[in-house]
Amino acid sequence: MNIKLTQQLPKTHTQKILKKEAKSKDAACLVVLVDDKKNLFAESALADYSARIEQLMEVSHFSGKACETVADLALAGDKKTTKQNPVQLLLVGVGNTDKLNHTALQKIAKTIYSNTQKRVASITVALGDDLEENHFGQFALNLLAASYRFDKYKSEQTIPVLTDVYLLADAALQPALDFAQAVFAGQSLTRDVANEPGNICFPAYMAEQAQALAKTYPDLLKVTVLGEDEMSVLGMNCFLAVARGSSKEGKLVLLEYRGKSNFSAKAGATDTYTAGNSSAKVTGGLKALADKLPTKLPSKKSDKNTDSSHDDAPIVLVGKGVTFDSGGISIKPGAAMDEMKFDMGGSASVLGTIKALCEARLPINVVGALACAENMPSGEATRPGDIVKAMNGKSVEILNTDAEGRLVLADTLCYVQRYQPKAIIDVATLTGACVVALGHVRSAVFSNDEDVLFELENASYSSGDLIWHMPLDDDYQAQLDSPIADMQNIGGKGAGAVTAACFLSRFIEEGQPWAHLDIAGTAWNSGKDKAATGRPVPLFMQYLKNSANNA
Image (cartoon, rainbow, N blue to C red; front, side):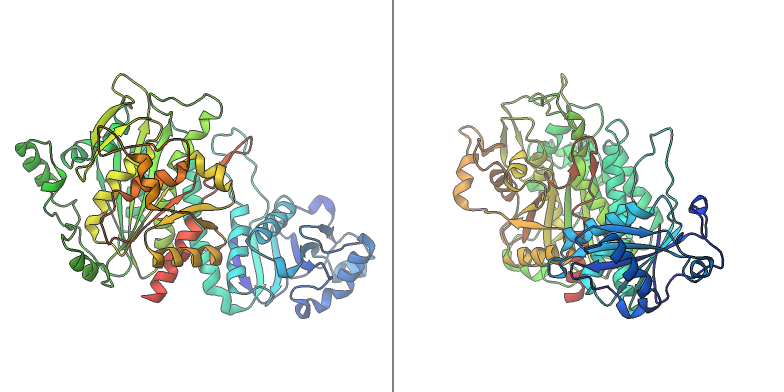
């Protein structure tokens, strides 16, 4: 669907538009937004239609409540009147404008699309200057998002009649519209890969999607893929403990978006991360990895702060990419297990964010890391009670193989700190406890850094992709204590989302700004209309846009 700004109302025709011609390429509709006090958006621009609008509101008893609609299909009146006003008219209520938030705008956008997509080729939505820039961007994005469909596996596909949307608004809003289109491109990719079934979308598929992006944007993007042999050399045994039960090889996919500078990813010393490997294996493996390893993490906090504050230091986004989560040996109940194809929603959102960055061409350096594995039960699968050593040398007692997302993230977090990033944000469909706490409205955010938290919260309110700050008190850490290892991978029944974040925090070096997003309740919708939402791509893009503007 095409979307553009316009300063003109839709053109009129010289003949009556009959019902049987409603799907004609010439069919157009003017969408008028009306608040609960019957005030019109862009009222001055609609002077030629005012009498018709007033008459329609009067005869239909239109009140302007949110998402109320009434349509005039330009069939009434005598021949002369119809010639003057042949364009279809749709009135849509917006309710109380003081309560016009992201949720309201989303519902209004869906209402407009659902009422027009089957019967007209183009619509013009009269906005005028009644929406400020943030709300305009949210409305445009939600109107585009309403057009998204994933029906590639259906033998019969319905093609919408609606192809063109014009927003009657100030030309100064063009940058906001361009940004919304870039976000939509990334959000659509996120939804596409997350909606794919597990027999199509597995770790190698995710790597292929990243490599396809690199071919599309060769001037901006470099992609590197690490397989299980390379991860074994690096001592990423937590990651491998998850992948080992599946016949599909685990992959760590690194996407380096170079929007500001051509930052390097050179090999560094890795002796602290290869304990337990033979020296010959380490030497040979490191030689093979020479062009894949980012710069070594500085040993001193003062050095790190100096390097990380450099303008070219990237922001790193890490996504959990468990392409199907059976629970492993700690197998899940059968009910709704099909929805565990969405357990790679974190990596899907990182992939989509990189796509959106390439479309928007933001002047910022970003690394996306997709920690992709399939969690399956087999004779090779990790058992509850097994102990493995992470990349940073810490031992983990795996008490529940269904707490696997934190394991792939732990090693990936260790790895990406070699980029000396300004900030690391990991995103994961991590815990059912988060759904219990926050439902499906807000994603949970945990952070060790007030500045990162503040910036994410600002981006949340600007984008409408909402988050909620959760605690990360040291007192919760005791729930992860193990009698025979450095830690265990679950913390008991209480505060499950918090202890999962506490587990991840143990793999963050002191002084490294970091945040964790748990999107278990917001990455997809359940039930008969199950589908990925594409969150938190809008949040990430607003955060990165703000970071680029403030650099």
